[in-house]
Amino acid sequence: MSIIYGDALNIRFPQHDRVIANIPFNITEPLITRLMGKGNAPAFLLVGESYASNSESNNSYSTRLGLLTRAYFHVEQLLHIPKEAFVPEPSTDGVLISLHPLKRNSLEKEFPLYSIRCIWDQKTRNVRDALSAAIYQYTAARGAGDVDVSRAMGGLEKDNPQLLRKRVDALTNKEFTDLYHALSGNILRKLYGGHKPRGGAQNWRKTYERYLR
Picture (cartoon, helix red, strand yellow):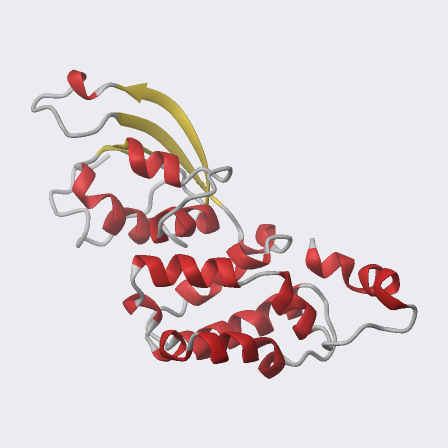
């Protein structure tokens, strides 16, 4: 074992099998984003209560960091620690959480999260190009045939022209979460042909069911 002195936000991480840290709450976002997509090592971190709540999969309200955490990790809350236990006392309670990295193919049944992860992997591109690539990756992973990405993107381009021209990592928290909520089944319906096959709605559901789950 060796000790490395340095700033965890800047140094190159050595090879490791886990991360265990009591971190300052104000570096939660940059540290978590550094851990995204960096191998299979789990992390056990003491974080603020608000972030711990937003990273739960059953939480209907979330932030950009909360959504990204769900896209990259399985999160479990292990221990709640009241703020009175800290010196100096912070403004929020703390929660010990575990972050176990997810493989991207484990998200294939969750189109919005899969797409969010794909576009964050391309965060220096504009949203339109990154999302187009994400949709192609999703359909390829699901074994789909020919798809019409431009048709699927049409509604988003009409309603959010400014958003799609921005770089992914320049999106505000609200823009990022709005984009996540816009990645719904409606996009998938347009993606897979934009029409109902013979037999009407019931046959349409049978045809595309595996893509909409």
